[in-house]
Length: 124
Image 1 (cartoon, helix red, strand yellow):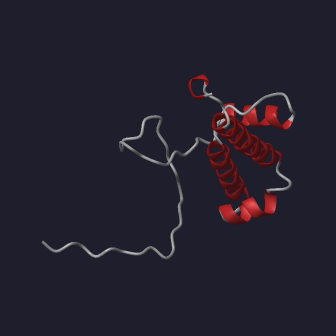
Image 2 (cartoon, rainbow, N blue to C red; image 1 turned 60 degrees about the vertical axis):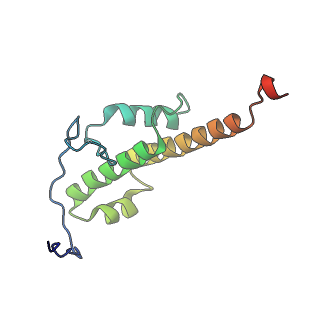
């Protein structure tokens, strides 16, 4: 049996991304957030205002940043990377999500540090 040749994609344009609540492929490692991700944006806004702790992992906030950059890219007619580069310091949603991402990273670091240094009564 001859295996088919592998093709290398050198130029790709994505016109539409669709997502579902339950992936059809078991073990899928990527999750795309829908553009109306109100809960994660609300939590990011509360984090930015100093009123809440992160409810999501840092990767979730990073995914939401890319979704927002995609929305801006559609509005301005540019690429997602250019939209992110041009609007990362001016778009209030991206700024709030970035603060949420950083807070989630710090919370994860704190939890890892406290788990490492806990003492066991059995071994003291």
